[in-house]
Amino acid sequence: MPFTEEQLAAIEHAGGHSLTYAIAGSGKTQMLVGRVCFLLE
Image (cartoon, rainbow, N blue to C red; front, side):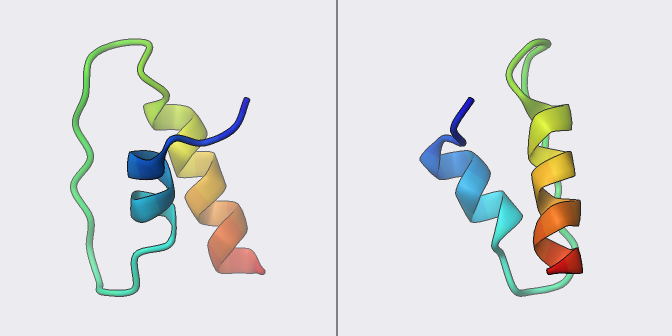
């Protein structure tokens, strides 16, 4: 499943902490996994 524009913005942000909140089933965990993979690359 591809990331939305909002998820990509959270995954690729460069400035410190990020707060993510959304309804259940919106892809928060998937976005978090994407963020970890982004940071490890």
